[in-house]
Image 1 (tube, helix red, strand yellow):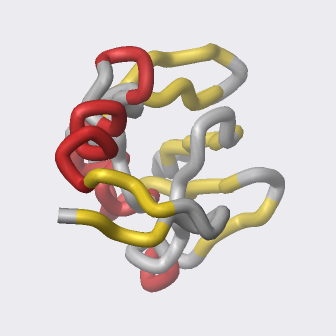
Image 2: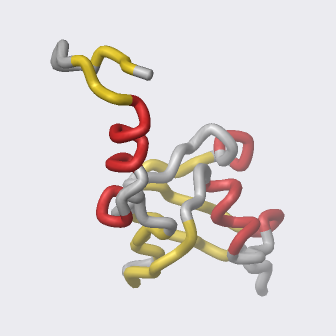
Length: 96
């Protein structure tokens, strides 16, 4: 089976698939995030909400800043994470 490569060349599908699956080309299954100033290697996580759940952080009393922008809890599901992002977690504590 042949297909047209993006550069206009005809390519054999099976050969292209084998090249694509080459270990050197497989995307890493982890990402590095800077959390409260510390670099942390974590599994690939798509959103701030996924990160908070992964860390088992107490969401009800947590404030999150993502790359310098403070997020409302309702924004966590839409805030996409990418390798190298910086996050600050602040725990709210009542006191007197």
